[in-house]
Amino acid sequence: MRKIPPSLNLQPGEETRLWQDISDAPERISRYRKLSRLMAKRNRPREAIVLLRLALKKMTPEQFREVREIRKRIARLHEDAGDISLAVRAYRSLIREYPDVSVLYERLEKIFRDTGRDKEMIKILKGAGKDNPQRERLLKRLVRLETRLGRLNAARHDLKLLISEFGSDYSRLKDLGRLYEKTGNLKQAIVSYKKALKFKPENPDLALLIGVSKRKAGQREKARKVFLNILDFKPGWYGSHINLAEMDIEDGDFAAAEKHFKQIDISFPGNSRVMINRADILLKEDRPEEALAICREGAAATAFYYTDELSLGHRVLGAAYTALGNKEEASYHSLMAKRIKGSSDFFATTIEVADEKIESGDLDLAEKIADGLLSRFPMNSLAYIKKAEIARIRGRIDEAISFAERAAREDNPKYLNDKIRGLKLLADLYKDKGMTDESARYLQQAREHSAS
Image 1 (spheres, helix red, strand yellow):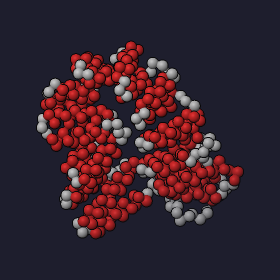
Image 2: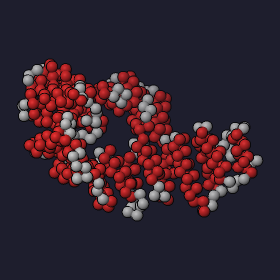
Image 3: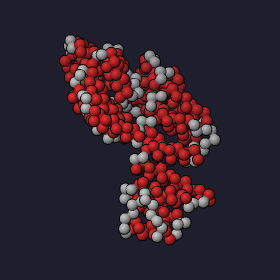
Image 4: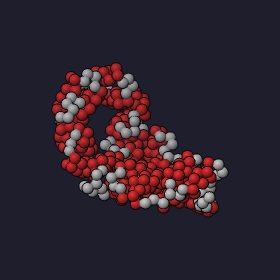
């Protein structure tokens, strides 16, 4: 039997029998792959890689297709082993040699997303030249990534490039309209939406986007006409009724607004945006206590990605607290209403505001912002980091440690950077206490996670 490499810990039975098969015919690549699959199945990915590397040494240039598949498998096994830096290196190498294989980009993007390194993926996608057979797909992937990261101007530029090279369709024109809308160019947003509407006439979602853009642009009568027109071919459409109701509130016609709310109640009882708007009416009718009770419930039920609705909830709550003489709550809600409105990333905006208040020394308001985030997401590691930083500034080190420990327990790979921040903060906090051994331990953990 061929000598077993020291990096393999083969067990008696099937493993040693398969190694014997390799020894008998070392040129048979299928035998290496079979034992490698067994190692992977038994949760020993590093040993599986060793076998595949042995196979590569036996392969000829004529077997280039199988070589590629084995190298893809090795990259995936690095992922399974948690050796992320090795996986990234393997995928980068493969992309340089096989730029037309889409799955390589998919795997690398997932790694970068999970480890908070999206900007590196942008560089790779931008590097795909016009001669790349996957260029259309990679441009689409680039636009999605830039949009997710809030790089809206870049996303719009690359989407226009995609359209110029590969043509327009409904989805591309609609997405272009959204990007124009989000960056404040309402005129071009409407133009793009109307072009998209030619692909799908009487599409209520798209028609609604046109109406909303007209409303934002101050074209109230034109917007109202669009919303009413949607109801002609799509009776009961939520988007039309809620926008018409809000415009009625702006005009002081509360009875007309309530008619629209009742239509919404039929299909969506307890809708959060309806509750907030009804609270707004109560507030305007000088009934702040009732407004506060209803708006609290509605605002708490609003999904975090509806930032304009969240902003409306904060605005109404701020006005209600002002009417009731609670300046502290009014100040908090008024600030959040202003900052969240139009934001594409609720979390990033909220943390940004908290950081500003920490820097300015307004620790009470900074803590209130962090608590507001935790009220929605009780396990949010970044909010706990903010709480820890505030407690540290106040000299409450043990309290800061308890918050940092919660952040350091983050187990979602997507938030690895938050976990590392928590570990580094723990190292600093124990150093503050003069506990150098504990400090070094947490610092080493942070380094280990950074290296992975």
